[in-house]
Image (tube, rainbow, N blue to C red; front, side, top):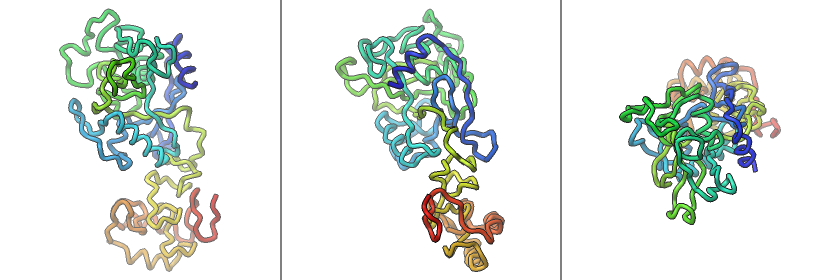
Length: 341
């Protein structure tokens, strides 16, 4: 129903969205991990190729053959990756999904209806210069960021795509996003064999030239998950992108959530090395014994407060700030005398 209302809303309006920064990397900072789109009412990841740094344990990911970036996946592998991203509660949410596209001429925008992919050079759900309701990436590319297509409305090649120049071609404005790549991205719209004549096709968006069309799901494309609505309503006191309810250090930013002893308190706010409920001289003795010791991912040494791979002077500075305090606070901790939230 949400997709149906979305397609109908955009069918009569090429609205220009405002992108609102969400989940700052540091409290009060202006480097964001996500952006809320107030026309589409969805939240975009700030990184258009998050899989390059966050694979979430998925291994069947490889290099793009046309663009020097790691992160392309088959359509099915992308679904697995997003499922694992949700299992990890990325940015405090577990409802990320593949970007949507719509079959505007079919009887139901949630499937491919009658035509499957009505390709043209203007105002359709596939091709160039797409209808504003054709899909979320199409709307971002054309209407929010103002890029042009590789062909004009008459089918004539635009200058940006003459002789197929190297990237970024027509993708001249990427807005506030990083890694918005001039390459192919999957959408969530599949084409059944009964309509397309062959099984295993899905709609892709080519961000190099602004074109949308069908492609075999075995192809390697990039993925850019979104989620419905705004993530600003989620309490995140330290601004690290992890909601307070599931943040193991609610008062200090620790987006990696490293918790070496698995007590519900992240390393960044837990200098209680003997787990007696307070950070004191006994912990200081234990900490000094670990100075200079290695700290290996993913478990890390508990004395590696900032989880950077070694116990060093940086950790000493942070450990001193924790002295005399209990560990935490944490939205997860159930250790010692601290009740579960």
